[in-house]
Amino acid sequence: MDKAGVFMIVSLTILTSQINCQEAILHISNGSKEQEFCIVNNQSWTPVSKSLDTAVQYPLVNMISTLLCDPSGVSPEVVKGKALVVMRGDCAFSQKAVVAQALGAATLLITSNKTLVTPSANDSDYSKVQIPLALMRYMDFMEAQQVFGDEMEVKLYAPPSSKIDASIGVMLLIAICTVALGGYWSGACERERLNLDLGGASGDNKADSEDLPVYSPIKVLLLVAFMCGVLILMYYFYNILIYVVITIFCIASASALFNCIHAVLELMGCASGRFTIHNTTFSVRSLILACVCISISVVWGVYRNENRWIWILQDLLGVAFCINFIKTISLSNFKICVILLTLLLVYDVFFVFITPFLTKNGVSIMVQVALGPDASGETTPGNVAVPALPQTPAETLPVVMRVPRFSSWTQNLCGMQFSILGYGDIIVPGLLVGYCSRFDVWINSTKKIYFLSSCIAYLMGIITTFAVMLLSGMGQPALLYLVPFTLITSATVAGCKGQIKQFWTGTSYEVLESSQEPLLPEARPDHPIEAEPC
Image 1 (cartoon, rainbow, N blue to C red):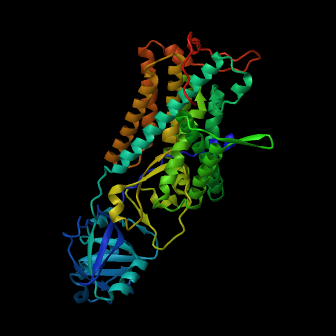
Image 2 (tube, rainbow, N blue to C red; image 1 turned 60 degrees about the horizontal axis):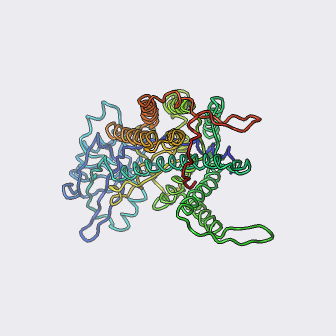
Image 3 (cartoon, rainbow, N blue to C red; image 1 turned 90 degrees about the vertical axis):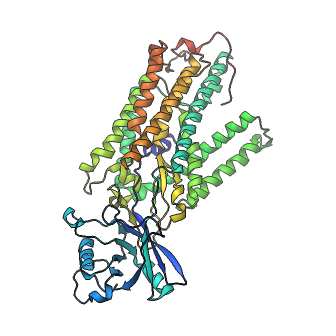
């Protein structure tokens, strides 16, 4: 797998905002049949009942032949005390609602052939409207008319959706387990490498290491500059590069999944049958495992837009990708960790909060790339956009963990809702956790104090992120909390143990004519270290 391709994936690990949904439900019946449809309303403007039992039932008057921008041609006796359905267009939602209210209508439904967005108005218009107002799909109303005819009774209600959903707990578990496993694996590989050095392993064996050390601030600057370039290219050439990113992700995630499962099988001591063809030896276990991993990646690539179940495969591949990346990229000292995490924090803040002032549509480059070209419709927290017609799902970057909101499954008429977490919120602090794990190996720490403290700091940081998100009702840039939590905690532990200098300088394998020697003396213990599988 080309290193540039992997770095391209990592450079697109985006902190995607969650949307505070405004969907509601339209219950239609005629005495013998009943059916429910998705509608969109503004709860802060015209709230509706929270349950079907408490909702008021109204007869429905079909007037989709009119736009209701004025009361002409509509008799008050026909619509008084009833739910009125009209067509979208020509005038503002609030104007239609004021006219319907003046005619005596109890509820206004506006059918639309365009994307359903949260109804809004000027501040002065909000107080004028006292009746519930909602948008529904034109195709849904035509379907209801075929099923029920003209005799329809309707109820509008919006079941309360708890902010604290079980999916957040699942997401927290995925995040902390991924970071901990990646960090532990990084430390285990370092322990095995040191044992190979003590055992006099040949240079050829050392060259087989898949680790990519980052020991120079120049490398860090080049990496961040590369990420900025990739993000900007994605912004301008999204429709082309999205398929390049998807292809790279399929290859990289399949390789990562193979490495992760192969390491587990090695740890379990599973047998590996071998056979030889033309003087080339093959492992039966590796071949079968490679076929399985490639198949999973291909299935995800083919069905990547099937929201109902494909999120399981995406999360599986994502976890493997993040674990393998944390294990593979090794930061050589705490100074590099501070530089990298700080620059990425600035990178994230700039592309999320500053670039909206520089783009034509007022959407940040980060959000535009994360959500695709149609991101402009979802820039305001609390707004939603429900397609009015069946559409081919828009391609999005596969750089987030996704878990469906369990509380919305039973009322999922408007589309699945997900709790999401960007890969960057796992990988970036995970690289620091990996360094702490390797440092524990260098100083022969049996309690793994640096590794455990950094994992706890990450857990506290991610909990804080979700807590602020729930309290504010807005998506949060997780690195804003994760970077300070992990950096400060790691530095504090090193200071309390009197090892801040060693922790800061770490070890750097410099390319010299002589053999490579780690700068940290604790990396050469006086007694052999028991190897852990890598």
